[in-house]
Image (cartoon, rainbow, N blue to C red; front, side):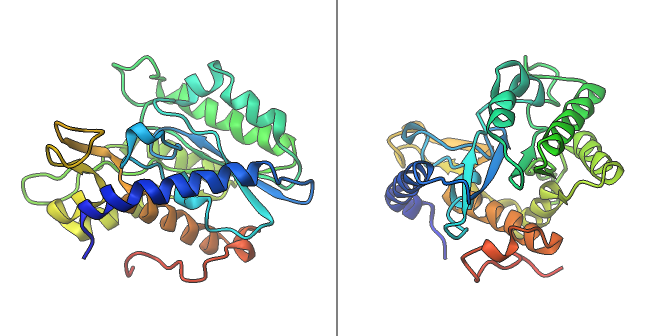
Length: 264
């Protein structure tokens, strides 16, 4: 049985080790490598030690490939498609992108909230995603669209409530129209959270009691951001999606034990 206390003790050392490995790999990139760029928000991003046990799914994801694939995680906390462009994060990917590389694009959490500076309306969200797809293809690289990871929100009957319905639908429609591979992380993660239920699903999120973590002495009840276990489960959904889509990355998944998280 997974226990959040184990994450507190062991998770930091595991993530620090993982980040050191990712940093080392960045110095070993050669022209023969395929790079997988991750463009997205805090649910995907690398985290600073001060945020642990909060973990973006891009962190464990980077450890699942053989030496021919390098994962370059450019996701940042709080970013939307709008701010990812305005802050130069997108141009930094395009400037590095080479033929045969991949760009995994996951936005929506911050785009869809009208009270945030990162907000962009539905048409703007769609246009920005279309730009990401177009410019990736212009570099002869491979775009992959992902719907945003589900939030943990249950109603009084114990049924999970979707919080990305409109913006996830935009991602799905654009992927279909432009024939872009789609990993429906929203739908898949919703199914996992529903299976775990209102209490069990807390094991995947940054839920801490007061005094459990030095980073959150007052405790934490976060229904958006994952802990180490939750990030791993999201990464497994993405890896299962890569296999289902039969992307060129599939033969380079080094961990053969990656399986769907639930029976469909």
